[in-house]
Length: 122
Image 1 (tube, rainbow, N blue to C red):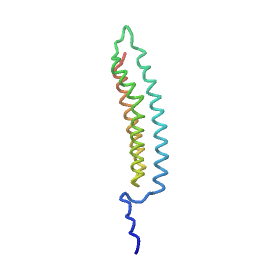
Image 2 (image 1 turned 180 degrees about the horizontal axis):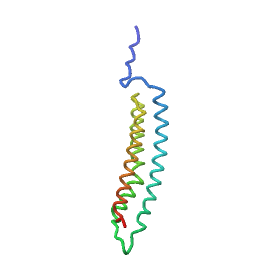
Image 3 (image 1 turned 60 degrees about the vertical axis):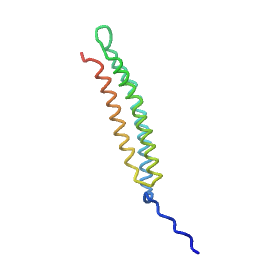
């Protein structure tokens, strides 16, 4: 008797270049998320002009700083999970960290917009 044929993977074949590029881009995504989170911590300095003569929306400022600090890390973790799933299923994966990087920057920009919107311009 002959052994049954092994069914082909439903996701296709694994490409070495895709795996290497996905890992390199994932490392860059993690570095960018760390830099964006660190930069988000400095957004709190926008409240320096708040005081007795200038009224600021401290709640919106706090939410903006937290979004800018934590948001890029959350996006990076979600992207890494999606990347691992795509790699395990042998799907094209290099684009996932690129999308994650764009989304992380947009989340940080949204947090920064909340911060700068909570401080009235003089």
